Length: 154
Image (tube, rainbow, N blue to C red):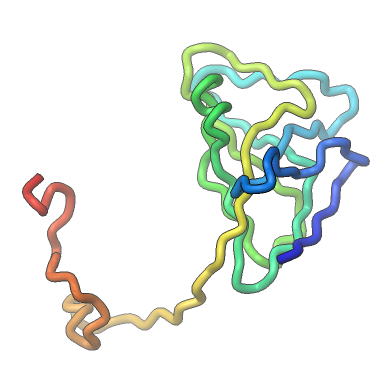
């Protein structure tokens, strides 16, 4: 599959895989102003980090923005829920959270996340009049019922 992307602001940080077999494309902080030379994220703070990237995601797919394990482990910066839907034409931002105890500083071009393209099943959802949702049509082989956390006895 080949997907098109566009770099905003004459950006020098295109989305790339570090290795050909990597699942995700590395995304980097791309300042919106040339004068921005650093971005600080205080402990407990959440910041929308611009990537300078616009992606063409085809119908039937989505792009999920995920943690880079090194950034999460070494810098305590975690990605919040970020889904890029097919048809979205704007810049991709990374919802970055500092869960550590120290302020983290980013320089332009620092890796902040990775983007993974995932197939999407477009199901049609139908409301049920009954709370017994599996009685209408046997779509599962499980007998779990309403058992939630710890319901398997372990």
